[in-house]
Amino acid sequence: MSIDTADKLFGAPALGDYAMRGVESVPGMLQSGSVSVLWSLIELQDEFGIGGDVAEIGVHHGRLFIMLCLALNAGERAYALDIFGDPPGSHAEDRDRFVANLARFGIGPDHFELAVQDSRAITPGAWPHMTEAAGNIRLISVDGDHRRDGVLHDLALAGAALNQGGVIIADDLFNPWYPTVTEAIYDFFRGPCGDLQPVAFIAANGPVETGAAKLLIGRASHAPRYKAGLKLLNQDDLKHCDAFAGHADVPSFFFAGQPSRRPLDGAMREILRDITHGE
Image 1: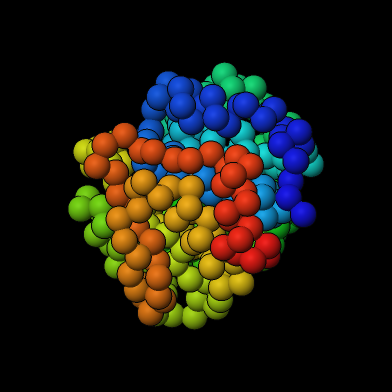
Image 2: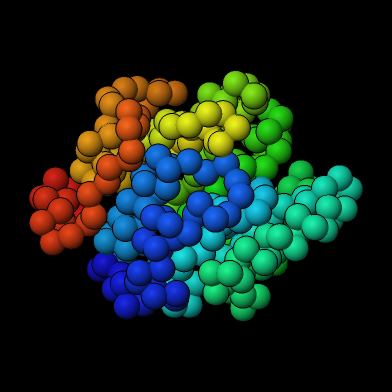
């Protein structure tokens, strides 16, 4: 059963308003191509009836985390984890900017929990302030430690927190500034990653200092529906589908110009149900 947009915690228009305008007012490395595909992903989760909490490892000033928060439905919560300096918490001004940016979009302490901590000190399944949410995360961004072992650890944290229909947003794939991230993602799929598999590539569509490519990762039970839905809604930016890390038919979205997405309206919904057989 799909999730009614009337259940949106911040109102149905809030996500679109942020994606089209508000995101540009928040510093960070989230490009318009990623915004376009992630917006479609959120619509697909609502259509597929996939609820749950949202989270991000490495929130910086909140550019992506705000988008995740604005996707929340009634009764859901957001979880943020960031080191904010070394030692943890030493850059208090960054934490304050993060909290202030959320407040500008109506996101207050009642809506999210923030852990100021090095993720390497956390055992998968034991994220602080997240015991009730463990295993109930539907969207989680991984953009923390960029060293190989750190990325592998954060992907394990994300996988342990993910619910059955959840998706991991892995940042900085193929980023020339951080080649160890790409190395870690390949190694993740070579290792014991369970039923997790690549869902889609989102190419960078700007200079490296404004962001990099992302890889969406989901469970085998839901990956085919996500792939079908993203290829439908973002068909104008679909470059091709190819195998990656031993998994077939992974769509790549590339942006020659401004990203172009199709809203999940009545017509698109009927097509989606046909190609996914109403699953």
